[in-house]
Length: 157
Length: 157
DNA sequence: AGTGAAAAGGCTTTAAC
DNA sequence: GTTAAAGCCTTTTCACT
Image (cartoon, rainbow over all chains, first blue to last red; front, side):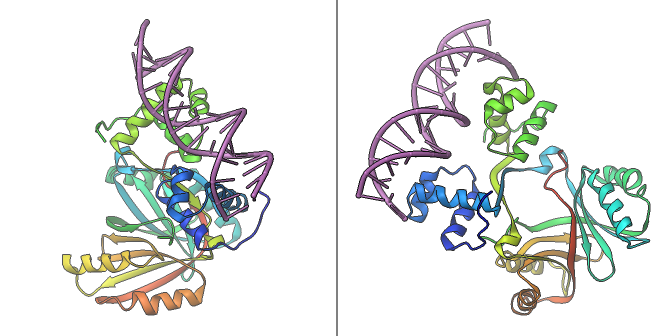
């Protein structure tokens, strides 16, 4: 973590794009794809790792095969909007594995939650045992995801 | 892609958990962490790759460093809910890189979109030039993400 | 399913240009 | 920015339990 440059050229982006599709693509293949030596590719990847734009290497999993067949969007309104309440709400959500995403939203001082649940029974249990036990929830509204039209992690193509 | 078993034991999940944190963890380190030979680890990973639960190896990027500082949630209602309209809506969203997520939701026949934008000007441009040009949008409501309390990809710890 | 050990291949560094 | 080469580490295969 030495460099902190924040400019990336088109070649950098092409490398990231390749790594997004398959992070185990050999350097040799990357260098051929973008017409650059393997050493240059390596230096660019190292620079992007050091400056943090390339945060980590990970895997993508099929949640359905792990039993998580449904996604639920829950909109929540809290009683209070103090920093204290927000902090405790965040802490509580952190400890619930099924809460994949929790966003504080402008406008109505609402929260958007995205949950991964096994089925409707699991969803009901989660809401009753884990979510509604969090103090300070004034109101909530759930929507089941019927279809995922698109899901990507970055605007990079 | 030969096997299609859909049962995974605790050891499989531990391997996935390690790969989620760092997909470049050497097999040797994984095997030490779970008390299993490298070959067994390799066989389990291969099995999970073949059956598709381990979809792909990828990287996590820092979107802010790439210039995408803001996230916007857009809720959309369409004029028609026919399969044809849905299909064309999905196609149009597919071609907009900034649309990271598009979900068809139960209840009001609404869509949830999650957009990555550089700033408010970029958001305004995106809405005016790309989103509102899609035919069939009856109504939309935007919310800026003020804070991300939590964001993970799986319920696995 | 499991193991250890050998073979194959990719990563990383260095050096010279 | 380039190529080339060496050493190291990881992945992959194989023979066997």
